[in-house]
Amino acid sequence: MDYTPQELMVAAAAREIGDGEVVFVGMRLPLLAFALAKNTHAPRAIGLFENGLVRDTPSSELLYTMSDAPNVVGASWCTRMVNIMGLLQQGCVDLGFIGGAEIDRYGNLNTSYIGGYERPQVKLTGSGGGADIASLSKRFIVIMAHEKRRFVERVSYITSPGFGDGKGPEGPVRWRQQVGLPRGGPAALITT
Image 1 (cartoon, rainbow, N blue to C red):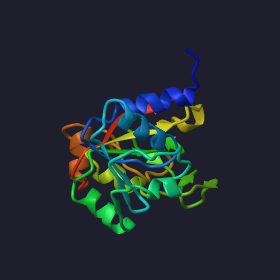
Image 2: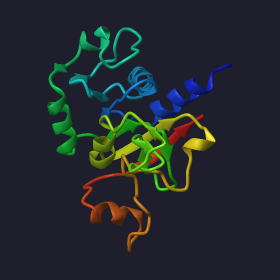
Image 3: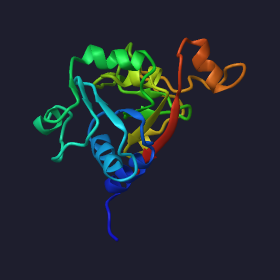
Image 4: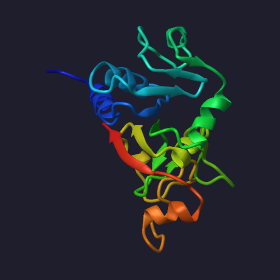
């Protein structure tokens, strides 16, 4: 069977979604992964979208962005972003999908600056909801293209925290607790 690397990434991401889990879906490939999971092994998964939508059924049409009309039609709840972020803050989100320009070996993500924030060589888009998802979901999955420049020893800037420097006195999970992150951390990296 022929498939593209992106299709394989979608299948791998879909497998990470458990039945009945609340998922902060994100953009691009995670939209497809959520639909695939709902139609195969996770029919009771609930999708949260940063634009204020909650879905318990997949969209009937292919989505290009979370704000496409087919995602709104049939949504269980159409609310505001602040309510979706409130669910995240309350610990209601089992899994979140995020991407980044750079990732280091501790799962920290950079979507802000390349070369440091004082004198950046490149300014990027910023966090969006990524920092919130990385900080507050029970676990998060990074999905990004496999390019050498994206995989670095230390990210130029931590936009979305993974396990920090990995040197907490009792390991990387303890680091998250020490800096006040109540839950989770990176659970997987899905790449081409």
